[in-house]
Each structure stands twice: as structure tokens, then as C-alpha cells.
Length: 212
Image (tube, rainbow, N blue to C red; front, side, top):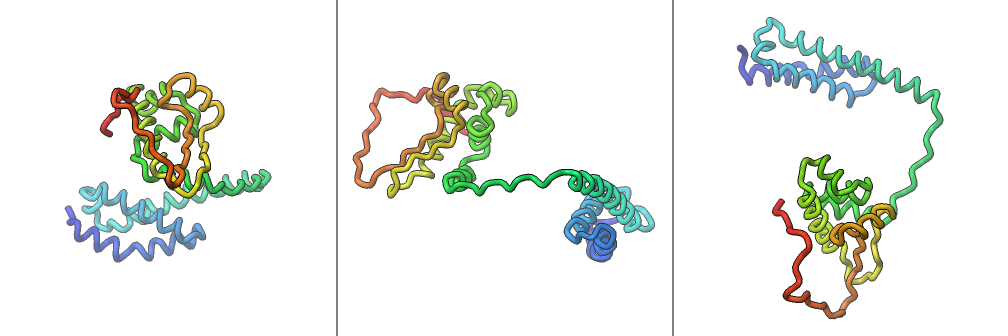
């Protein structure tokens, strides 16, 4: 069996030439590099066996060419389809609110971000999200509850009193009727100097927050 150092030497010695060959066939340098990298990855995954071949590079070359041939055939099918189809209408530019929302969502932990997108953008019910993610419905509610609070904190602008509405009307109506913790996201930005109203001491959150 050959060593990891020998695999590294094989990669460094032959990657460029194989990529150039595949590029000449496909006409796309980036795509060619991706396919050759995939071929080397498969060789590494089977290095116990491939490393014992007399010419491991021949195995990598064959895999790279097989991948390139398959990609070329798929590209040809796609080109024929596109030639017969009308070009789609240009997508409208994203609104400033949408851009801000996407940027804010990146700062929310993955599980809560996924729940927010599924519920408010994909219009999925809490039970559907629970089934999709494998979580309990109570956990999904907690993700939504905490995610809304985090978004509110991120999107609050003390110099603006605009309201950001992100939920589709159907999701908004359903949420308002089912659970106050999954109501549509309406983030009212604070006014500078406005007094804050403390929450009553005996008031409890309606959803038990998870620690995820």
C-alpha cells in the first residue's frame, strides 16, 4: 500500500495536466478542475487499493474522463432544452427589506433560521416542520419564538420607525389563529428616547425555550 505522501505527490504531479486535458474536452476550466478534483477524491477514498496499482494516475485519468463524458452529455441535453425554451423573465431586484432580512437571518443559529424560513417563507405548518426536521412540535415553536426575538434585536434601528413585514398573508393568518409565538414577523424599530415598558414579574413565556 502506498503512503499519504505518495498520494500527495501524485496529485501535485498530475493535477494540472489532467485538468488541462479535460478542459480541452469540455471547454470550461473551472468545470474541468472540479471533475479532476472529484477523480482524485475518489482515488483517495480507495487509496488502499488504487495506491497498489502500477500506475495509479491511469485510474484517476479514467475516472476523470468518465466524469467529463457524463457531464458533457448532460450539458448537451441542457443546451438542446434551452434552445427550444424561451428565456425566463428577469427576476426583480431584491428590496432593501429583503436584503436586510437575509443578512439578519445569517446571524441566527442554523436550526432557528431553518424553522423561520420554512414557516414564514415556505408557508409550512409547525407540524410539517417537525416532520421535516425530526424535531418535536414544541421544539419547533421554541425555535420560532427565539428566532423571532433574535431577528427583532438584529433588525432594530433606533433611527427608523418602519415596520418590516416578512410573512406571507397565508402564514400570517394561520399563525395568528394558532399560536401567538409564531405570529408574523413584525419588527417595530424603536424610537430614540422612548421609554421602555418593563414586563410584568408574573408574566411567563408561552413557549419553553430550548437550548439549541
